[in-house]
Length: 205
Ligand SMILES: C[S@@+](CC[C@H](N)C(=O)[O-])C[C@H]1O[C@@H](n2cnc3c(N)ncnc32)[C@H](O)[C@@H]1O
Image 1 (cartoon, rainbow, N blue to C red):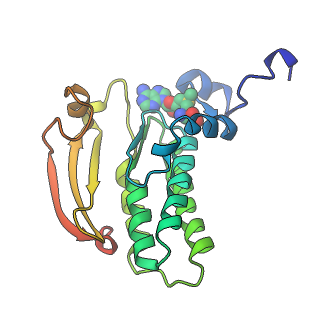
Image 2: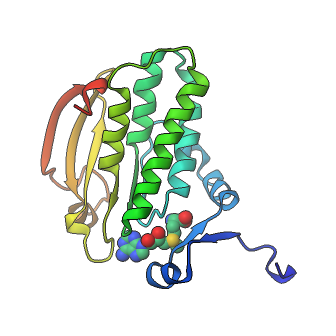
């Protein structure tokens, strides 16, 4: 690399056509981590919600999830509290991309982070039946294909909340409603669907 550009981020691309059509240039890990350091408290909070509107193959989403899971493990070392809180962490992260391959990769990478983290830190524990399906379920809802410029009315997000230990309540919102409301959060627009509270191991059923 020319020395003149040595200070610039190293960016990853998957081909000229995709750079031209999708502006697809992924941010490298070093830059992702440096940017997350600027919001370090939120990025390591189990509950703080993150939304990436053009998430690519998930470089930011994966790094946020890793930070959140470190907090989960510091605080919750027993199987059920670990599982419940790691799902809380996962369900606080949202991503949209116009490209289906990117979304598939982002989901797969986030799933691997969940699986690897579990096997590294709880290697002797027996996974609760339904935990794996809950991971898949949350990823399907939170990380989705969509056009942020022309299709926000067909993108929906689920607000996962946990009024009780081990349980999740779900309210679905249309992204365009959230964008139009004065506050870009769940308190502004009406939800379009509500799902009664469920145990975390029943989420994917
Ligand atoms: C510059 S890349 C950034 C990817 C990721 N944020 C990162 O930093 O690694 C831009 C991404 O925007 C996506 N994209 C382009 N147009 C879009 C649109 N209208 N709605 C949603 N995503 C879009 C592309 O598919 C691409 O993955």
